[in-house]
Length: 219
Image (cartoon, rainbow, N blue to C red; front, side, top):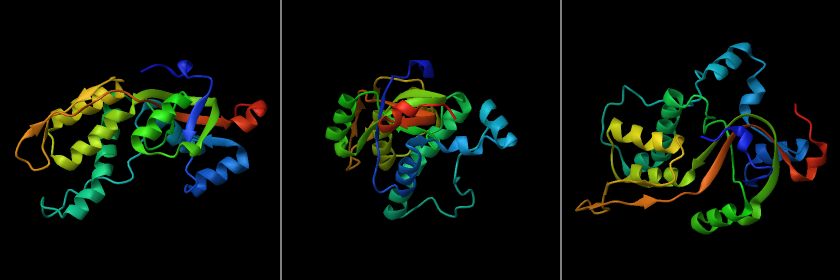
């Protein structure tokens, strides 16, 4: 993973107007801040963050679940979290210096990349705002399309631990493409969907909005 020193001078973030806390913080401070900064004054947390042992998982699978047969509603409800759960376990085990997807700010390195994201995933291009990296604790450049493929795959099939490890190692190590072997929707055959790269930055730190760029001073 490229070090944070290779961050571009400007970053582009899709700022959802529906995220009240983020919008309010941006209006009040002119900054986007990852939540880890708020707890670094806690020496116990700060030590765990530094050595990579901090636990950011909000939920864990229930070991007492009585059945492995779940309704489509529950499978759909838990699918995306299982993607994030496995991604976080892989990060914590093998990529401790990377920011967690549960704590980081997601940003793109150019407006052109944002346009690609908007066209491919129907994100609203009008929500993009420009920021300058101000205070960066950790940063990782990762391929967001691997997560897109994982969400599709997790809805289709179960995977061995070896396959899960391989998938998320590719993601955190910055693979520029990935292919999976999946059952077809009708479960009568197999298909091998693949993805290329859309590069995305995950950042633990502070981003200064361009409207406040002349007021930059690290916290």
